[in-house]
Length: 252
Image (cartoon, rainbow, N blue to C red; front, side):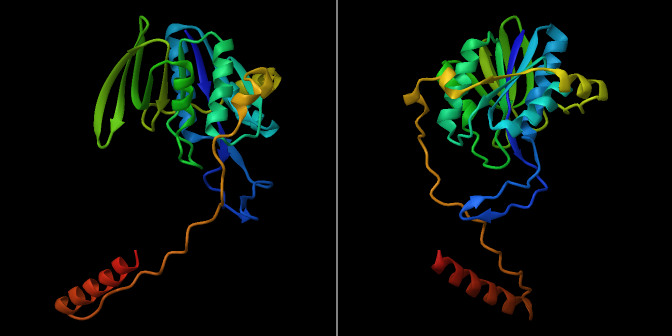
């Protein structure tokens, strides 16, 4: 089974976000693999171990994103591809990934349910649309055999069971598995492995790379007001709470 895993490098979840000139400052930031993408890598490795085949990881980003690919290789991926683009437009990224998917023979594409920095979760859905294949999101259990996919997925507090035929794309939700740590031998091997590189023009015509979205501004959330304890007897507290809520609602 040939498995293609789409990953993205994101800020370390412990990083403090700093904004300068309405842009996120990332010069000194630490980056990691998007945590939900780690579940996708792990699931691909488990499927390969059970059924054979190859695991290819691909990312769209600048040179620094090669560290994320090296980590995936150290976990056990067979091959890594970087598309040299700094685009943050989900439509463009999906089209670039579709270009790779059309070059690489694949049975199943995996990705994270969403990115922890933007929370958008658009790229993989757009990719499935570009390739005209089924998409199953927020998967917490996956079974693949005989060209058939059976997946359990989160659905607003319930669980859905969804089935489809290969080729398909699934996105991994927390709970699907427990990602492995890269081993020392794996890290040493990953350092020597070649990372294939493509330019955007190699994968899509120029008009297909036109951005569909534009960031108008970037800002931190407003500081929350400190909590307030209501005092007095219960009747007085209820009246004060009602008065506070009435004022708050009038400001919305």
